[in-house]
Image (cartoon, rainbow, N blue to C red):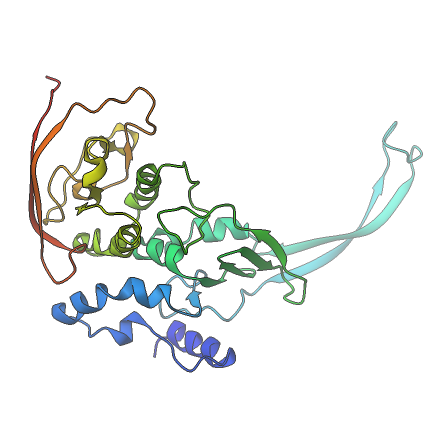
Length: 316
C-alpha cells in the first residue's frame, strides 16, 4: 500500500479501531456504477465515523504523514552590550547567551493547514463539516476538532493541549460544528456562505461539484420542507439566483455538463451572492416551472439536465 494508507492503518490500530474506511480501497476504481452508489452514502460514512484522519502534511498518497519533518539546529554563543539609555541595563553592560538557529525554518502551523493541498480539495469541505471528530496531522503538531472543542499539541508532543471552544453551530446542520463561516440567523444565508467558501475549491472531475456537497443538502432537508435545485433552494430561489463570480471575473463554464447555467455550480470558479441580507430586498420574480434531472440514484448528486421558467424584470 502507499505510505499514507499504511500510516492511516497504523493510527487506527494504535487507537484500537477495528475498522477503517479508505475511499481508494472501499470504492471500486473506474467503476462508475459503484462510485455513484458509494458517493450517495459518503456523507453518512463520515457523519457516523468515530474519527476522521486528515493527512495534511502529506503532499501525496505516497509520502506518508507519521514521520515528523527533519530539522538541523545549531546553538551559537553570543554576547550583547547595552546601548546608551536602553532599558534598565547600565551603559556598556554585557549580557551573554545562546542564539538558536534552525533549518528549515518552521512555518506557521495554521498556515500549513490553510495553504495545504489537502485544504484545497472540494471533497474535504463536506467531510470537515459532517465529521464528529477530525485528527489533523500537520507539519509540526497534531490538532483535533470535535463538536465542542479544538485541541492542539505543540512540539514536543508531551506539552499540554490548548483547548478552544468551537464558536458556532448553524441551524441547518443541527449536529455539526464548524468554524469556517459564522451563522447569520438565516438558514438560506448560511447556505450561501457555505457555498461561497466551497465554490473555489479544487476538483479532479468537475461533475463531482454537486455530489461533493450532497450530504449538506441531505442535512438541510432533515430540518426544512423544501426542494433542492442544483445547489439552490426553491423556497429562496429568487435570492439564490443572485450569485456572481468571485472578484467580478466573467463567468467561466466547464467543458463538460455539471449543472444548468442558472446554478452557481455551472461556474468554474468561486462565487458569491449579491444579496447577503434581507434589508431592502423585495422579490419581484414569479416562478412558473423548474425541473432538474439527476444522472444517477442520488437526487442531490450529478445532473443530466435542468431548466427554469420565470417571469421577472431584466436589465438590458
